[in-house]
Each structure stands twice: as C-alpha cells, then as structure tokens.
Amino acid sequence: MRTLKFVHCADIHLDAPFREQGSEKYSETRREDIKKAFLNIIKEVRESNADLLLISGDLYEHQYIARRTMDWLHMVLSEAKVPVILLPGNHDPYLRNSWYRAWDWPSNVHILSNENPHLILDKPGVNLYGIGFSAFKEVKPDFSLVPEPMKDYFNMLMLHGTLDMDFTQHDYMPVASSELKALNYDYYALGHFHSIKQDYNIINPGSPEPLGFDEPGAHGAFFVTLSNDGEKTQVETRFFETATRAYHDKTLDITGCKTLDEVRIRILEITEGLDSQRDLVRVTLKGRTELNIDPKTLNQMFSHWLYFKIRDNTGAAFDLDSLEKDPSLKGAFVREIRKRLDNLEKELNADPDNEEIKMGIERLNLALFFGLEALKSGKIEWWGE
Image (cartoon, rainbow, N blue to C red):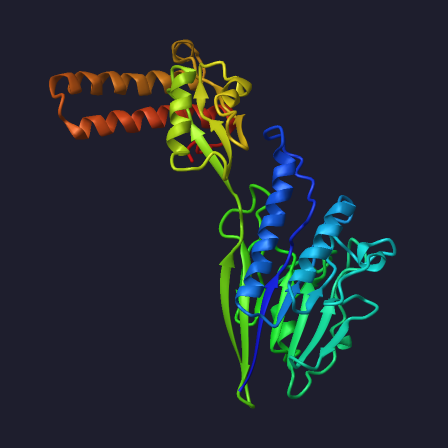
C-alpha cells in the first residue's frame, strides 16, 4: 500500500492592504493575523508528518508585499522541512518582475509556472502539474497540455481558477469539474475562492484567514491522505481551522427605539457572546425612526473593539397624524387602519388578557408600516435581520 500525506492550502494573501478603517493599528494587526494563520498551516505540516505542502495561488499580494515579509516567508518555508509547491494566482501572477522570478527561494520550494508547469518528485512518488497565472487575468486553460497520469505515481493537478460557474467569458481561469475529472488525476488542488468547495478529490480550501465581511464561516486548510492498493487511489481529507479572527455582518431594525441608548442596548444584544478582540463586526441599522442617528457617536461606544462599524440605513418615521389628513390613497389607508386599531384597543381594554386581540393589534401595526412603505417606494423591504 502506497500512501502520501500532504497539506493543501491557498489564498493566503500576505500583506493584503485591508483598507477598512478600524482601530489605529487595524491594517497592521490584520496582516499579522494572516501570518499567524500561515504559521498554523506550517505547524500542521510538521506535527502531522506531512510529505508535502501545496499552496494553490495567491500566496502574497504582488502590489503590496514588502521585502521584510519575503524575508519572513523565506524563513518560514525553510522551516517546513518538506517540499513546498507554489502555484501563482491572479494576485501573485508569474510576471517578469514577480518575486517568483526575482527571489532566492529556499531549496525545498518548487514553483509551477507557465514556463515550468510539470514537476516529478520520485522520492514520495508524485507527479504534479500546475495551471497558474502569468498575468492578472487568464482565459480558460488548455487541458490538452496536461500530461497523462503516470503509473505508480500519485498524480495531482494544481489550478487557481473559477470552478463550476457559468462564466464562459470569465477572465479568472474558468473550469468545470467535469473537465478536471476527465483528466483522471488522483487529486485536484484548487485555489481562488475564499470559501470551501469540495467534491471528493476536487478541493478548494478557501482562505486560511477571512479577508472581508463576505467571507463568514470556518477558514483553514486541508490535510489529505492518498492511498493506493495497486489498483485504485483512495482520498481521505481532514479540514483544520487556522483563522485568528471572524467577521460578523449584522442587521438591526430600530423601528420604535426612543433613544440612542436604547439603540446601543439592542446592538449589545445582537453582538452578545462576541469577543471584542477576535470578532470583527459591522452593524447596519434599518427601519424607520424619529431619532437623529449619528453613526460616529454610536461607533465611539464600541471604540475598544478592534473593528466595529455601525452604518445608518434608516428612514424617517412616518408622520401618521399628518398622513391621516392626506386626501390621497395614503391618507385613506392610514385612516382605515387606525380606525381598526382603535376598535381593537377598546376590545383589549375590556379584555386585557385576550391574546388573539393582542395578535390582531400587532398584525395591524405591521400592515400599517408595510403598507405605507409599499405606497412610498413601490416595494416592501423587510427591515429585520
């Protein structure tokens, strides 16, 4: 029985710019978080006795990475103590002035470029082929260039691209799972998407550290074991988390809030359990209110967080007294709903514990709000989370 153990990761994005305005050292802290996530990957390589480390594109940011980070990377990759296979992505393409060409990489590092896409490692018995980026955009790859699988070797394809999306004109290497499977390779090490995508032996591990509010959920890499009994290769995978932080995008309806302190309390309620130094939070306020919302003032209440931003998407509360006098359809609608509410309020005064009447009042208030919203904007938008 032949076996191969390796770690597969992608989309590290060393020295990502992080343009959001957080605390004073937010961007610097987040770039250090990426390094910590990568160190967690190296730790897994060493502790699990992996034979290889595969990095399927976007190891660094071509336009932003600093020399000191490359020095750090040289040290870290050297400490991996196993062959490290790098594939250029769309953020770190194999350009004439790229670090892939100009840098003195450690002896255990191998780069699969458009010039040298094929690598055979006899000792672990691996046949590797890479399809990466030599420019910031790439069209659909030519799979006829991929060599046939080698007998008695583990055959692996590394590719950085857009998987199974109907983008025939997409400029980020669009491919289909069916095209990959037709190559009859044992494992397909993908990169580009920052979320996990897995179809048995076709895996996109996502980014080890989340990079924005559009990247919720778990982030890490895969530990993979290939085993061959002489006839068929079996694939076993284990996902492990590496992220230092997590993004949380919240929406809060503040309709009915009377004071900014009440708004603050409700914000605290929806962020309960989150860690001010781990979790990165964005709260969008919606609904209709008479309050003068000042996001800057509210944000100051959460200044001890590494990143906490409040956005005001509220609208002005409806002036029901004025609308009731309006001769238009809006006025007629308000008068009718208020009339029904008055009748229910009288019934509730006579029977204070009647849950059916209470439910009726609640539904009429909702009908009043949504009806006016529809009459004003031509659509109904749900303001809740």
